Length: 614
Image 1: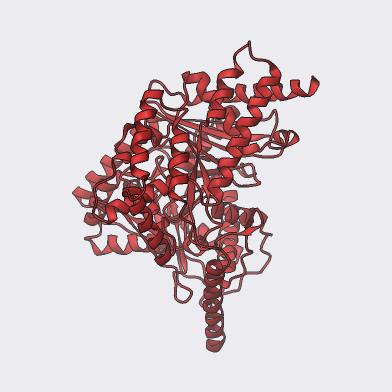
Image 2: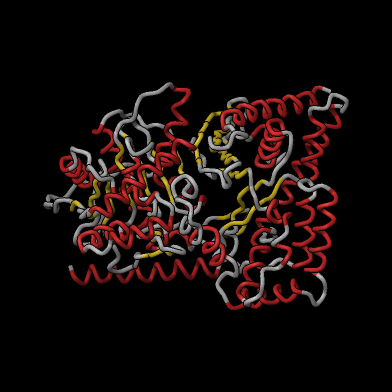
């Protein structure tokens, strides 16, 4: 038996190393785009956003930055050198700058939520049966990652980097006073063997492997979940998880106070080390079917508030699966470690994993361990403040989800148009109709075709989009001209998408140049202090496409107080949308933009249909 266990452990170790080698060798390093190209594309991106006099001023500043022998050339050489001597020249900087140095709460502002179609149960019994199946499927996925059996993914015929998959498990973000850091406890041998289960604000350590290293069966997991339920009848008075929803500086201070006690430190470490967290939510108030999707997305995103299920979250954890008693379910993930495409691969595995029919061995299992916290007056005060601040944030967030059923991604394909570019054009048209102007907009492009690659932005609006938007509601412009402008706008955006996917986007490169100056002890270049750069990076529209084949809805909060976040999931004959905005801004309204977007999509459909009739 001992030799068998050693053999299995050695196989997993060799497979994990092979997995990592494959992830490294099969994909090329991320290129540093040419300086002149990025500066030219940056100015082009500013054209729809700036008046001519401001654009002329910025052009001169950019030309000085990029002149031969100038500062830009020096910084570009620094980035080229960094690219030769690092795993990925921008990823570590990006994670630090975009996530770990951000002081905003992870709830709403950072962690994306994915809400999935309601399951066919409506009580705690069905909840625990489904939870046991989900846990078993995730453990099976992890086994594939650990053993190197995960299929290589491809995009446009090119293999994708697989490095993120092992990092999804047993990882957690840790708060700090100035910046956070990520801890990863996953190891091929002697790594953590438990998950954390949260119910009624109470945390439990649930070991999910037998002593011989085999995962528990579904029936074993179900029996253990029933034991957890029997130990958590009443709601804990102090919802410890609420602390993780705080402003990062505030939570960092409370974290240090919390860990001064040995019991608290042990409990926190067990949460951080767990493979993932399972949140067993209590029932929420019944609402109309029309509002159900929005309510469920909100529940996954933030838990619904301190009088609902927000205490059942540990927002720092990389993976949190949420299952409600009413059949609602989804997951929440932390972006410093995880991102959309790998999460979509995990979800696909969960949804298509066949039921486990293995009989549970007649071996008594240890009782799941409840994690205790010693709460002194200072920690109690921290919790009270966190509860107030989270409820304020939740009340400030406006969420509208809807299922657009007139058409899906197959409709634009009939006209040889990219579905993503077509939807982006509709979002720009809707925003223009609401606000009578365009704004800086970011869409997410995956850079996983490169070693250690994460994301870059696809920027809009383009000049072609602006031309179409201004012409569309103008009765003096012919239908034929509008269709031609639409096609030009969609094709231009598709070109920008291709550029970003090939590592030739502008935003990560500009950030790299700025951070390279700081790295060399130089002042931030004037180009980045220019009001134009501030406008260009004040993304009032944060958008993202969910890369799944399921009827899921992703949602996250806007990047800026006066902005929106629009997420969409195009299926063949329908599209799921979520729109968020903050109530504190009088100019934005999520429901109004959602209704206008629905109308814009219908108008674009009618325009293309009318073209076919001519």
